[in-house]
Length: 314
Image (cartoon, rainbow, N blue to C red):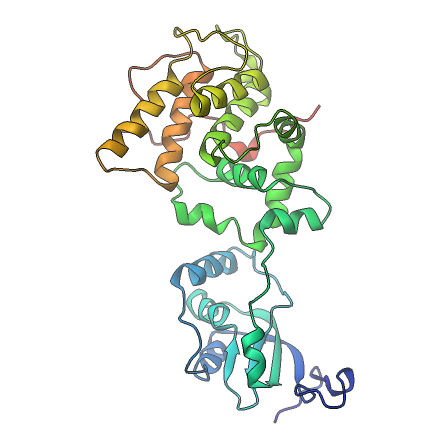
């Protein structure tokens, strides 16, 4: 058994009869060749590799967003790899070198205790580090942050812990908006993430984006127009306004599109559906009443680039 100087024997940290009393621990830099070596030691009954999980890790590694964590690469007493195969597979595909905590000589019976706890959501992780965040707000910020041409997988990648700081930063710029939404009851589950993200785009465009220089014919302020969109899309009516069909038809045309496609067995999911919400929200923000909501031929987000928009907090 190799015993480099940076390896720490944990025997002294365990109870005398602990079945893991001979466990060895180190921080190790692992490159493609080393990852291939470790993967060749994979436990035969280890879980199947999940391609999407590997893809997310590769993306993070290639963009310098993968960091050392306490989730260890682990080997049992027979030298078989029992934890970490997805990260090692990502190292091979990305052809990079990353640091990992590595455990050796763990008792094989302890494998059944891996990955059984309730994992923290991204909102949980961000909240723990001092920025309280509602799970829906987290989902909305990720959608707003994503590129117009990003697919559902690309949006999902933003849920990885490597992006927590970025999501937290963008949320913090507009936290007043989300706190007001929660106070007014718009964080309920019925307000879907796509609808909430599109409404958020209306708010920041009118408040601090290009739209702040526009004199809108409907005469509404940013927050009011944003939540009015949510009311019409989700509830089909306003809490306290009379619908003006000269300016307010877009949410109804959006629902016609969604219901029509469902009737044809063509339910929309993920990034495609979100595009329809964005187009409808942009028309609604500008007081246009389109005959239908279409995304054909639209190559760019109709709203300002979210990443470059300043804080909307007062």
